[in-house]
Image (cartoon, rainbow, N blue to C red):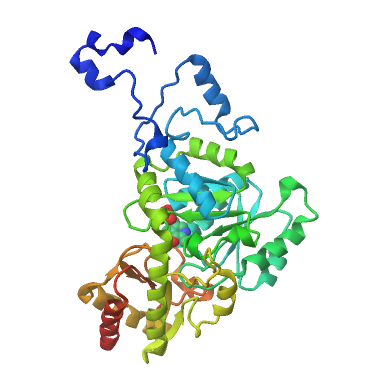
Length: 434
Ligand SMILES: *Cc1c(COP(=O)(O)O)cnc(C)c1O
C-alpha cells in the first residue's frame, strides 16, 4: 500500500467509514480462536498479475499450488469459511478432499454430474430419499442417462445388472427411511471385480449417501467406497438452522467438483458454512452419543410395546440387519454406533389399516406431544416424527412403495436431545389412543 494512502486524515470521514484504517491486522485469521463469518462476495486482487494467477490456479491443483494460501477471487469459486469447513469435513470422513454445496441435493447433483454423461448408466438402490429418487427418475432420463433401480440388500442383483454402460453405483445406508443396512464392503468388492477389466476412465464408482449415519457412526470410504455425499442440513449441521451439502472423496476429483459448483452455482452460503463449521461439526460427537443412547432406549420401548409391529433400528436386537450394522457402524473409537433414527410400524390387518393407524398416531402427536414435533428433516436438537409414504418419499408412487420396502404405515422418528423419559412419555400416550 502506498505510504500516502495510510494517512487517513487526507480523506473525508464518509470515505473513512467505508475503508477504515488503510492497514489493519484484523483480517488475520491465524489469531482468531473462532474464524469470523466471511461475508465478502469478491476479493481484492492487488495486481492484474495476481488476478490472472488466481484464475489460472482455480480448480487447477498442481504440486506447486498444494499447501499454498489460495488466491480468493469470488465467493462462488471459494472463500475462507467454506474452505475451512471442507478441510474439517474431509477429516471427519477420513477422505482426502471435500467440496461443499448449497444443499444435500446440490451435492448429489454435483457428484453424479461429474461422473456421468449421456449414454451412461447409474445403478441405484430401489429405496432412496424422495428428491434423490425424483432426480434419478424424472431428470436423468431426459439427459439420456439410464437409471436402474435394484435391491442392493442382495449383492447378487448388482452382478446381474452391471453392463458396459454402468458408471455409478449409488445408495444410502442406513436407507432413508427404512433403516435397512447395505453392506458397503460387499458392494465395493463386486464393483472392484468388474473394474479389473476396465480402463481407469471407465471404472465404475461407488457413491454412498452417509447423511443418516453421519461420519461419527460410519465412514464409507474406509470400506472402499469412492465418494460420500452428505446433507449438512441434517445431523452434521445439527441445530436445524442452515442448509448445506458436501461431497467427500479423492483429491483427484476436487477440481472437477469445484468447476461443477462454479458453473451450476449451488454454492454453500458463507453464512450457512459458518454455523456448520463453528457449532455443528464440533458438537457432532457429543450430540450423537446422547441421541443414540436415547434412540436405543426408545427402540427398546417400542420393541416391547404390544401395539408395535416392527422396529427398524440398527441397535435393536429385534431388527434383522443389526448384525451387519454392528460391523459397519462404528464410531471413531470403534464402539458400535447405531445412530439416532428409527423406523417403525403399528400392528394392523392390512397395509391400508397400518397407514390409517400411523396417521392417527402422528396426528395425535402433532396435536398433543411437547417433545415430538411433526416435521420432515432429521438430526435436529428436537425429536421429529414424520410419515415418509406421504411426505419425504411421496415422489415414489404409492403403488410402488411396498415393493421398494417402504411400508405405507411406516413412521420415521429422529431422536433429539430431550430427556429420553419425556420422549417415551409422549410416545406412550400417543400409542395408548391408537
Ligand atoms: C435430506 C436428505 C438429502 C437432501 O438434502 P438437502 O440438504 O435437503 O438438499 C439427501 N439425502 C438424504 C438421506 C437426506 O435425508
